[in-house]
Image (cartoon, rainbow, N blue to C red; front, top):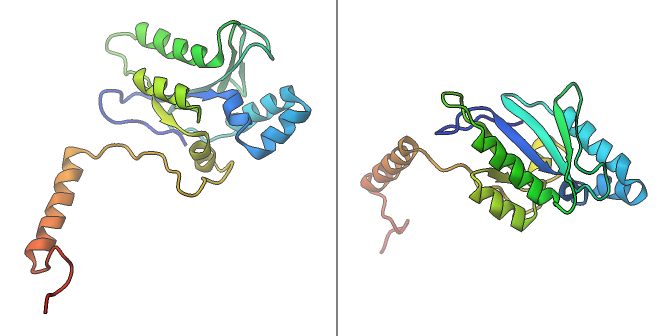
Length: 190
């Protein structure tokens, strides 16, 4: 479900998942976490591994290291999903930031830039991720996208900005409509 972005970062999109944020916002995983947190983590990774990721640069799911294997990283599902545990006192949020910053700093000239997408409904993580140049998707939006949950009513992810060509086309359509004799008020005065 990941997509390629257009513009300066037209390379593959790498998805960074705020692991516990997803677990505690998805009802089935939340219920499982109350019984066995490790099984809930494994189930999330299993679901992410089973996703269809056309054009994606991979998935990394990040958990706070307090409950897991601090400072470790492992791949699952044939390398499709990388699991990272932050090293205390570092939080998963800080680990996500560090992963983006490190990757951007080590970018090679001439290679397509990796577009980053952060999956989190944590406002602080989302705000910082945007500052780091990442696209942000809420947990609810991501779950709806991959079929793991319904999008709450009234909540939508922002669509990507329109290109200049798209804006010109909309402007042309509205100009033609208004030039065709229809009033802007939508009705006749009589």
